[in-house]
Amino acid sequence: MRLVAVSMTLASMFVASVALALPISYGGGTYTQDFNGLPTTGNSTLLMSGPHDIQGVLGGTGVSGWTMSNYAGSSADTEYRAQDGSLSGSSGRGVVSYGTTGSGERALGTLATSNQISRFGVAFTNDTGSTLTTFNLSFTGEQWRRGDIAIAPFDSLSYQYSLTAANINSGTFTGLGSFTSPNLQATTNVALNGNLPANQVPVAVSVSNISWSPGATLTIRWNGTDITGQDDGLSIDNVSFSASVPEPTTWSVALLALVGLPLIRKRS
Image (cartoon, rainbow, N blue to C red; front, side, top):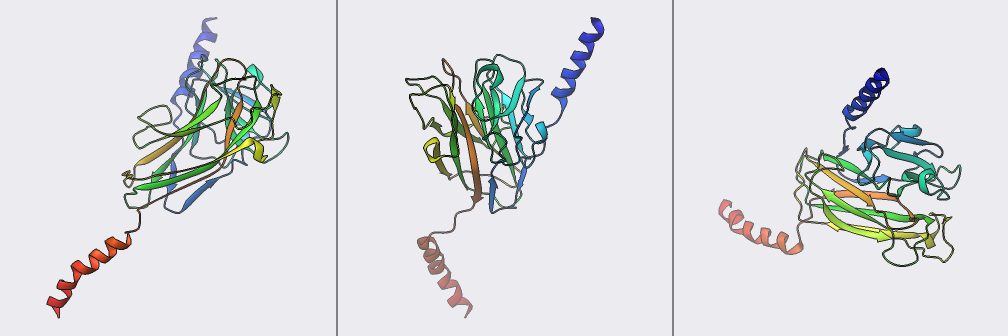
């Protein structure tokens, strides 16, 4: 018994000490993510509440810089699985790679229980060499399961950003909004196809007046919530992110031209 206890402690210490992967290097332009490298089958329980890298778990690829955690559930560990929305409770909960059975068309989401109240997110490092003052974020919110909630409050997935966070579980985050389940059909506790327009919500936000300096990290996270009863399964897909320094307005350009005229005349 003493040896087993020691082994479990060492295993927990090892998992807790593993460093997270580096944030995504952002050098300008548009970053996109369709999550189609996520696993189509399987489940895994990761020791400790996280955050944990999503890349590599259950063979998932293409999601470097994305992490997940069980930030508010009663369990000390984080559960991650692939399913089509037909599973609930202990067999369906946690961070979820959603998609129809066997399909490579995936979405990243959560299914909450009191045991697993999950979040996931992505981090970017500003490698443009300039201080960026605006960013744009868009994605498709998808519903893959209809639970049994008939009245408000309904299930939602909120999204936030931070310029100070060390990871998705620390730092001060600013709310950007949330989306609720788009399909509140009368037939409950069933899988839905999140690829259908009836089960989708388009989301687009633009944030200005920030100061994202070179070498600093910007973190975006999505938080699942747990409400009484069987929850809906919500996810995101087709993420698009870009950041920039706004172009000068027409009036600013005209003013600079007028200010420069006396200097040009003096030189001539």
